[in-house]
Length: 481
Image (cartoon, rainbow, N blue to C red; front, side, top):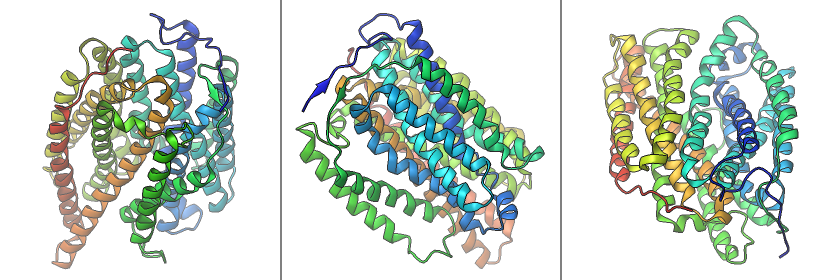
């Protein structure tokens, strides 16, 4: 296997300070990733409008969100190979080209079919950008300053999905749904143009062959699991495929995929190297991060349903009520990252999991008369708790890996986040829907049934959060590089 080393132009990890060029490069990637992740949830509020304008059913419209998540789950596991085989500039160019082309196609789509294709192309670019950002930070930023940089990445991963519904509600209140894409397109193009002149190669490339069978198994495994979980999370009455079929296919393909990667990784030929799992700090942080993502996506889905179906608020008001929580997380994430560099993860993660658990237990009290300002406050409390958890976990987990596993660790982390988000949405929506349906059968009104379903769903989330509090005591600070 031939390896070609690429010169580091923007400052290696060994330096005590991150160079200005390195800071600018990371800044460009952060902006690009934020714009891309924003599109992951921006469609949620727009689905009713699209159902009317495009004359499609709710099940069909849901594919605009499910298709995005499904594509992300299929592409992200391949990024570990891409970062080994191609230079940073090549990967960045491919990512921004795909996202910009998908955004243009979605903005000009005359019907549902082309809109869905545009969303899938967008997701391909997004799936590459997030691990690319993580790998670049790990390659450039000195160990003692990674917390602050990972705090910025936490804004991208967590705040952008929270802000998406708010932005969507504001746009739809005044403009056509296509403007959700027309507004994003020039931002993406400007970021592309700036990044094309700034992005330098900061990693070594390896001439490794592509394992096509692993690609197929990866697509079947992660695609099948996310599709199955997403089908549980929303009505699939029109589907001719039972929900258990993609889950079984995905699970079987995952076993074969893992077996093949383990057999090939010793020779450096794995599509996704699984050796990061042998590092306890990485594995514990990854598991705790998965629980946090489930809680966050559950709240993102359940709170709008509560505010609209139980309290009767419109989409714009709902989006604005969720905005303070997203902003609170955005403010806290860099502060938490700064604190991580000084005191490590455990003094942040332990109180963070307690705050998240407390917020979810408070959400079990939501009823038809609960004061709306307190709903905003509890949501903000939840997001602050997640800020205390997510940045330290991401920094300590990925920072515990050797440099040659950064790209694979980033791909694993991003993949598990997608799976956890889909699993959280599926779990909480299914619990809510089944509880509400049983209450309606017993004679309850629709609003009372929805309130009961939301209560039980938040109760499940609160019980799950107790596991994260226990796991927080096992988080460790990675050894200095």
